[in-house]
Length: 404
Ligand code: SAH
Image (cartoon, rainbow, N blue to C red; front, side, top):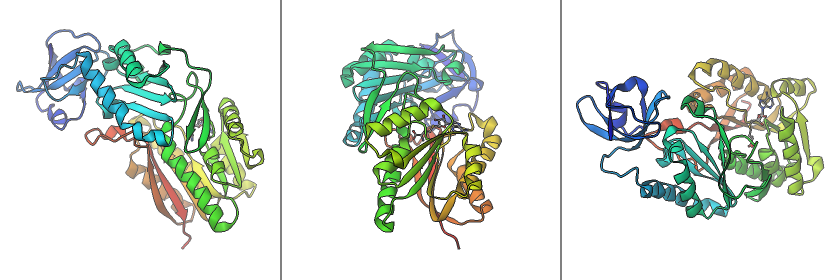
């Protein structure tokens, strides 16, 4: 096995069991490992720090498999056990949904691998040289461990380019999935298009927030004797809109700039047999629509803001912060007294504290006051590995307006 020797002092993060070795931390490599080849990482003092997968083209030069040196990581049994453990941990979710993340990369000890399950179909993303090199093997294990009908590979994420990998979309194992896979989440049906949908087709990471929206709609109706009126911004295929309809919302206005997403959303509403008069779909830019709605004097009991990732890296944090501030301010302005705001950020570069500060600034500028009565994050199928805080990308707040 080839040794990767670190510069003096650069072993600290590995000693804390963080799974990445940056190119800038490497002093020398004893030979020329291939992409994905298992290497031994050694400190400048000769201490063995563990075994990882080498990625010659990436600034993330090594992704660690283990912090021991006595594990047979190249043995198929190693990956199979890691996959089995990941899959087993998601079993309890089946009571609520058949749309689940089975493998969440680093958090499951399989750096760069994403596996989502939609009923009997799996969708994969190979985002590192580490897992790309073992793609066929992973496909075989997944088929055997889950009994899936087929695996569709959506390895088109931008992260692949940074690893020097080409984009690849197509069937990896078993049968081709149908054009639309029907899934159920907390009693709501969704059609998922795994070929062109965002991520692997559906935002499984917003499950808990969607359920919370459903519960809020139910509670509102009980307390006020009428359904709530909601505005769902960046609605995509209708996730929150349908959850609200299920909860008994009186009217949901949903905005997205994508006509395809909206037609999927409409079809999803039909799939559930929801009363079409409660759901209004608007193709528009949210930034402009929020201003227009205000001019028109519209008000809502609930506004949801679930935008795409505004900050793709640390370089874009300032610009992204302004965009988050803008939609939050203009969203708050549409709320009635005692209204609710669900607001999210899926930018990893914007942490929980910064997001809270941005939203607090918007609350202040709107001349309102608010309680944060809930904090949102991705569900239990996206566990936060304590040694890998980068895994916590999605955060959200449920604000309740309190005008003191
Ligand atoms: N809330 C959704 C996921 C949102 S994904 C769910 O739970 O499923 C983000 C969405 O924002 C995408 O559908 C994209 O088309 C849309 N979008 C991106 N920029 C936009 C803009 N400026 N105005 C309106 N929609 C936008």
